[in-house]
Length: 290
Image 1 (cartoon, rainbow, N blue to C red):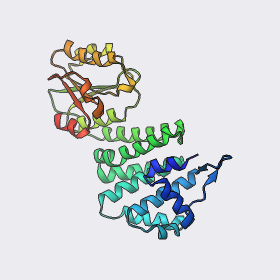
Image 2: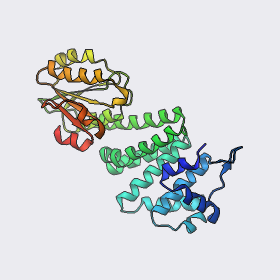
Image 3: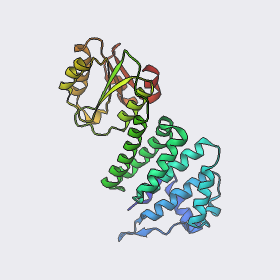
Image 4: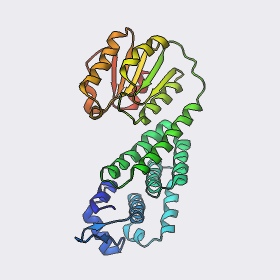
């Protein structure tokens, strides 16, 4: 069940504008709770997403409101065939949201594959997958997607990134080996998988440890593998101050080891300044360093 404020957060269409469209163009007929609060079902959300996309690409709302569902889809397909890169990003994100809401795994997979094929994994992640995940986060915080939907789309994206990694040639560069890991109680590994892809694409060997790795086993792993580079993703809401200090201590006790921490802009300054610790808020900065 979506309230009008949920639609506003998802589409950036003001609630006032939605009400006007409903009244003037009979665009949607919202359901009502016993206390007369508007709410919208999945089909209505898919419709408003398509309407928003078309309006954002120059179609008049009066014309869009008169379109059938088939006509809307045809117009969206025309946008997707335009040369404008931005147009294609928007339509892919829109189609992914629609597929997720409808539990349409085949359509989700098809759209995701098309975006990766067209833009390459890295650019598709920045311009399609990440914006989609941000919008998914809006739905998640308002409890309008089920955990099953989140797990479904996360696993499809995860499989696509792993398939792209498997498609790379074997690493040949010597001198740097990267250990990739997430701290205890950290389970969201999409960013780490993308980092694995980017490092291997540059020709370096990676040792991918994945989720929920105890920090006390990393020193032994460094010694056995002779790895000189550590890569992790750090979100302070998931970790304690002691986790950060453990990471810094790991670098200090393993001479010559560099730590690469991918985090948000807010947390960049929480790590001590050191020539052996690098922090990043954007993948491009990470690529330039490795």
